[in-house]
Every structure is written in structure tokens, then in C-alpha cells.
Image 1: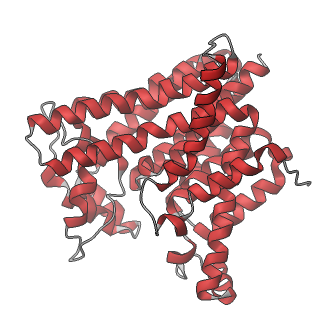
Image 2: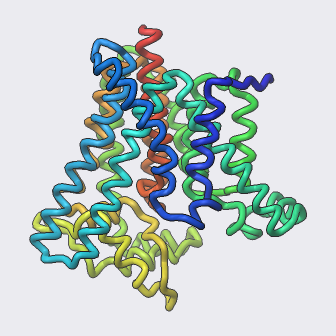
Length: 398
């Protein structure tokens, strides 16, 4: 188990770590991470200005595919939401939130495309190492605030001690993506990183993410049992099944059984969050949505068991339905779980399709009770892993 340092990626790794620094973000503004990572876009742009856009170059194709699959849907969501704001005669705050939320989502694929273009095979390790480094810094910051003994207390009981210090939501969900990838892709070559990721995830202890990872790994094991001759049709069925499950869950949360499930799982407050949003949507073909970013405007004012100031809905599936409406929700989720992966599936080798499905399953599970689409670290990690799977296939075609 040898740790190697790629000198080429030291500086960009530091940039990633600084961009996602929770300590620095708390003292600045929500645009800070984008300002830090803008350097990648500058490098990307300067290269294209100097040498031009050559789509016969695989690097250029890979970069622009990230933009196509990641940027285009959010551009459409932005346009659609602005129309909804006009039709609903929404106040100016809705327009501003739609613009801000859309900008955050649209700029991520451009940044990841730039990183893919500039660093190619090193991109995935670069992003992972940057997020790992940031969390290590957060541990040190936490120790400086509460002492080394607090860290050991948290290690003994990560669910009930110093969660506010050592639990970093966005990085925790993102690093689980990398952990799944390294476990399934080439575990023997990444033993040290896997050990680090396991330890970090233990400290962060996101239970739904852990459940999602276990389910995804189990699903991967089952996929390995599929007969080669039936792989293609099986994968297609699975992508459609994921889409159907997402839609079914949307209707399930309005059922009394959802309340009982949340109570039995010890997360009844999640049901209260869903219940508080019931006034803003209806299950109808004629429900056009409230516009992207709407939920983040109203949720802080919702009273949950007498508590106000809730930060997020913790249910991306319902959030997307409220904001995008009946038709918008089904179109976007069909794109995410069927159209996009099947486009990628058409070119990557079977082992990588299995990894892709495992990642999609993990994504779906986390959507049930959290708001991962709002985490730029998560979305960036997801995009860079999918792009890396595609790049590997081009380098080593079957």
C-alpha cells in the first residue's frame, strides 16, 4: 500500500479543498466555491482560444459531453421556471432564487468539464483528494475548537457526539460516491484511499448514504450474476425500474404508510417536513410547479413541530415535484434515470455499466430523505465519475 503524489495535481487539489472549505464559506458568500474554481474555467477557455475547438480531439469531446448532459437540463429548468414565475405573478424574490439556484446548477458541469479537459485521467483522483483534504482540515479546525478528546468521543459514538463539528453533509454524500467507485472499479490499487474514505465516512456518519451504498454494492453483486447474453436488456430494464421507483416514491410519501415508516425509522421529523409542504402541491397533470428554487424560499418559514428556520426539505424527489410540476418532474427524472445513462451505456463496457447502475441506485436512495442535488460537491463528484468511466472506455475499448 503505497501513497503516490502526482505533482501535476497538487495545486488543483488545493484549489478544490479551498473551494469547499466549510470554514471559509461560513465567512464569505455562497458564490465563494465558484469563484475559487473559476480558475479551471479560465484555463479551459484560454486553451480553446489559443488552439480552437477541435471535436476530433477526445479531450474536447469528453469535456463538451459533460456540458451537454449536465448543463442542458438545468438551462431548460431555468427557462421553464422563469415562465412559471411570470404566469404565477411571483414576487421578485422568486425570480432571484430561481436565477441563483439555476446558476449554481449550471456552472458545475462547466467546471467539471474544464477539470476533465485539463487533467483527463487524473480528474477523478484530483476531485476526490481535494474533498478529502478539505475534510481533514475540518477535523483539525474541529479539534482546535473542542479538543482532541472530542474527536475520540465522536469516534466512539459518531451519531450522538459533536455531529455539528464533524458531520459535513455535502462532502459526506460526495465521498460515498468515490468510495463506491473505488471499491468496484479497482479496489486493489486504491486500498489506502478506500481506508481513508471509510474512516472519513464513519466520522461523518450519514445513515441514508450508508444505506444507499450497501444497497448499491448488493445490487452490483447481483448484476455480476446476469448472463452475458441478457446484459443489454437487463440494464435497460433496470434504468426504467429506477425511474419508476422514483415516481412511485413521490406518490408514496402522500400515503399514511409513509408517516408510519418514518416513525418506525426514528426520523418522524422528515414526515413533518413533507406534511408542511402539502399546501404547495397537488398530484395532478395540471400542476405546473412553483419554479426552481421555490422550496428554499418557503421552507425556512415553515413550522416543524413548533420549530422554524429549517434549512432544507431533505427530500429531493418531493422538492423537484413542487418546483417543476407534474410534467416537468417526470421529464427531468426520465432524463436522469433513463435517457442520460442509456446514452452513456451505449458506449461503455459492461463492468462500467454495472458501476454506473450502482451509482444511480445510491443516488436514488439518497434522494429519498436528503437534498443532494443542492450540493455542488455531490453533483461535481457524480459528473466527474461518470465522465471518467466514459474516458476509460475510449482508452481501453472492448
